[in-house]
Length: 177
Ligand SMILES: C[S@@+](CC[C@H](N)C(=O)[O-])C[C@H]1O[C@@H](n2cnc3c(N)ncnc32)[C@H](O)[C@@H]1O
Image 1 (tube, rainbow, N blue to C red):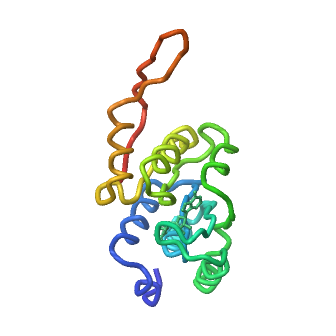
Image 2 (cartoon, protein in one colour):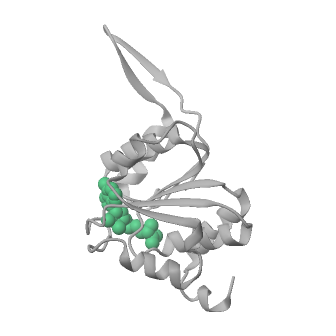
Image 3 (cartoon, helix red, strand yellow):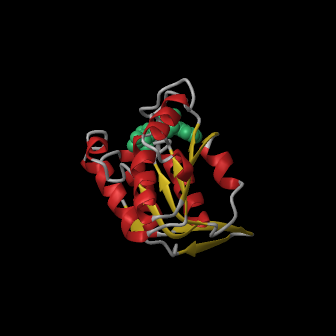
């Protein structure tokens, strides 16, 4: 990684970089882009891996640390660091986007969009459906909504099967978060 890029990325982004170097995803989705720093960490790792395609989704809504105004700032950062070929930015709601993805179609899904309980729960459950290998959830320790959603998913969850039956499903999920 060129030295001047190190300045852009803090310790947390370096960990994301290291995970992508370690698990070498061919296809990966990121939910929550904001100004593109986590996208940059992932795309730099893909560049150093020699392959990888990242689809990064944000509605640039100003919520949860987001900046309004669309993908321009993130795109400029990624282009200026020469990693644009690994990434496409998509302006969409995370749920709408994930629901349109096929089961097991991605190696890794990185979740860092809505941080309320319901948002984190829905995004993470969809991410589990779409990811083959790993779901990485950001802020799963420090933000209550995200943490509670992860704990509830980890414990298992009930599915209403109708006619008074409830199924208890243990998700087959490997966590990094
Ligand atoms: C914490 S920021 C992402 C930070 C980025 N991953 C990083 O580390 O540099 C969360 C982002 O999620 C976006 N967001 C919030 N709710 C969303 C939703 N329902 N669909 C898509 N994006 C959403 C916000 O616009 C914001 O840019």
